[in-house]
Image 1 (tube, rainbow, N blue to C red):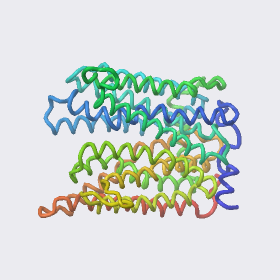
Image 2: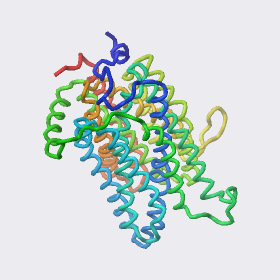
Image 3: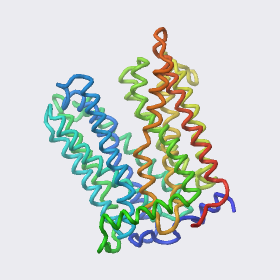
Image 4: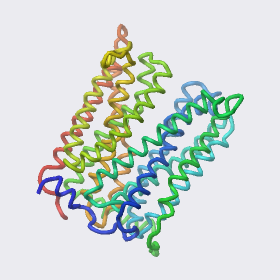
Amino acid sequence: MSETEAENRGEGSAGGVCCGDSESRGGGFALRWAIYDAGHTGFTMIVMAVLFPILFQNFWAGMLPEHLKTSRYSLTIGIASIFVAVASPLLATIAQMGGLRMKLFRILCSLGIVGMAALSLVEKDFWQLASLVYIVAAIGFFGANLFYDSLLIDATTAKNRHTVSGLAFSIGYIGGVILLGFVAIWTQKWEWLGFTEMPDPRLLFAIGAVWWAVFALPLLLKKGRQAEAAGITIRSGLRALAGTCRAFWQERRVRWFILAYFCYIDGVHTIITSAVRYGNALGFSQNDLFAALFIVQLFGIPCALAFGVLGKHFGARPVLFVALAIYVGVSFYGALMPVGDVSVFGIAISPMFVLAALIGMVQGGVQALSRSYFSSIVPAGQEVAFFGFYSMIGRCSTILGPLLISFVAIALHDESSPLFSTRAGIACVSLLFVVGIVFLLCAGAGRRSRA
C-alpha cells in the first residue's frame, strides 16, 4: 500500500471518535476548528511578534540597563516555554484518561484571552507584572494549542486532514495580515481612525483578546460528552504518562518523525526568530522589516492551503521533503543576501522581501503538514496523549539553531569582516533541515510497529 493510500485510510490513527468527546466529523466542525487559527493569531501577531517585545523594551523595562532588559525579556519568554514543554505530556495524558480535553481546552483558551487583555492594564515601569501576566497568557495560549492540534483528528476524515490543516494555517495568515495592518494603522496612521494623537498601544492587547475570543467561540461552544474524571490524580497521571512514554517509543514511525520534527521545526523557528535581528545587523530599515512581516503572511495565505492540497494528493512526506529542500535554499539565500536592491522580473526590490516571500511560501505548509502527518501515524486511543509530546517538541524547538549560530559566530569571528560569522551562522541552519530530511526518510522506511 502506498503512503498516500495509508494516510487516506487513516492507518495508525483513530478510526472513530477520539476520546469519545467529539461530534461526528463534518464540514461544519472542520470550519469551526479551522477558523480558530485566525483567532489565536491575535496572540501570535500582537503579543509575540510585534507589541510585547517593543513595549517591554521601551515602556515596562525602559528604566533598566540594556543587558538587564535582554536578560529579563529572555527569562520571561523562557519560563513560559519551559513550563508548557514540561507540563504538556502530563496534561495530555490526564486529558486522555478522563475525557477532559475540551474542558482543559476551554480553561486554557480562556486563561490566554484574559491574560492577553490584562496586558493592556500594566502600567509603565512595572516589568515584573508585565512578565507575570505574559507568562500566564502564554501558558493559556500554548496549552490550548496542544488540545486544539489534537482536535484535527475529530475535525475531518483522515483523507482530508492535510487539506483542513493547511486551510487552518491559511485562515490564520489571513488573520495575521488583517491584524498587522490594523497595528500599523493604530501606531502610524491613527488619524485614519479619528484620533488626534497616537492612542495607547496597550489597548491593542484588549482588542486582540476580543478578536481571539470571537473566533474561538464556535469551538469553545462545541458540545461533547461529559468528562469522567473521577479518581484521576497527579500520581495516576504520572503512572499513565510512563506507559505513554513506553508506547510512544515503541511506535517506530512516530519515533523517527518526532526526531525529524525536532530538528527541522527548530530550523523553521530559528529563521522566524532570527530574521528581524539579522535584517537589523545587515542594515535594513524598520519599514523594510515590517513590510517583510506582511509579505510572509500574504504568501502564507495561498501557499499553506496549496501545501495541504498537495499533501492530500501526493502524501505529506513527499511534500514535506520539497518544503524542507526549499528551506535549505532559504538558509543559503539569507546567508548570501545582498544589502542593496535586487532585480526581480525587472523590478528593483529589497532582498529582504525576496527572503520573506520564500519563507512565506513554505512556513505554513511545513507546520500544517507536520501536524496532519503526525495525526495519521499516532495509534488509535492515544491521540491526545501523543500530541502532548508533539506540543512539547514544538515548545523546545528553538534550541539547536540559536546554539549553532552562537557557536559559528564565536568560531568564525573575523574583525576585518564582522558580518561573515553572522552570515555563516544563518547558512549553518540548513544543517537542521538536512538532518530533518534524513530522519523523515527513516520514518517512512518499513511499516509502523503495532505494539
